[in-house]
Length: 420
Image (cartoon, rainbow, N blue to C red):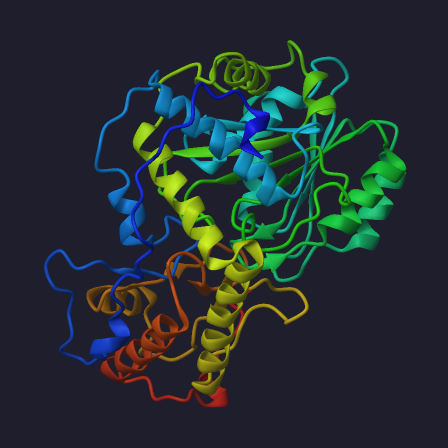
């Protein structure tokens, strides 16, 4: 697939065997267990994620951004990402962009909205949809943010009403696939169908930051024009760059629409196609690590197999937390297996900062909630994590609750409740 993009020569990159990192489950969890010096923590977060030792080691050498090997590596990565996306290089292109995933979101919004009569609709049910709105406002875009409840997937019938009411006006419609502030998985394919039915000339943009590479997404069947993700998500690379997969005909329409030099998506894609190089300094070490991460994704069995591992992680943590009396935020039909959100217990001894710190001291890093109406914490199931890591986290949660004198399983009077 990577032969779609220009390569100067065939070179051999760093080849390191896939090695599973040492896991905490082998040493148990107790009130006296603390992280040893230089020992890796387990990151149960939506990012940055834990990665394999071999992916880290792929960064332990230097390459020049104009070296033949590096240019070949960039071409190979671009082609591999199109292959993972299940699209042809005849119809789609992949553009790498330095920076976090939000940089890719900003690049798409600021580069693909027409300067004349551009009107953006953002379908939002969490923090990352809200962030799209902030980006649009920063660029002075004519934008409407349609708000949906944080604890459910986006309501397709409501989207239909919105599209029908303003179908002649929208030039861009945007949505997050997996809203990681809660774990909600939005019905992208249904939304894409409505977008093209009511506004066939409108571009449909999907933020698949935390789902690409593990949750199946049919880009063409969903009528997606632009989809973005980041190196340090389900492919399990290191932070440093993001990528945009664009329908070529949709991207080519965007000439002179960019509102920023650094975030100019079309110019970045042209430069990569013409010279194989970034316009500005690329994250060379992160690129090398990502090449290794792609090899490991393939060795694992691709998107389907990685998704199954994450789903098993989610199954272990969801059932384990339920057995201990913790309530999840989302119903099963609304959630993904990427991340799980749990309500705070209404117990007088519970304090999230203390709960977090005690787990962190034992090498277990969870995430605070990112909701505006409910008090929750989040446990991520992605990255270099395996079911035994999830079991070990559950053991540590038991120990921490005992230290905080919160009896488990939680009784109904102290179960997680909404603060809203």
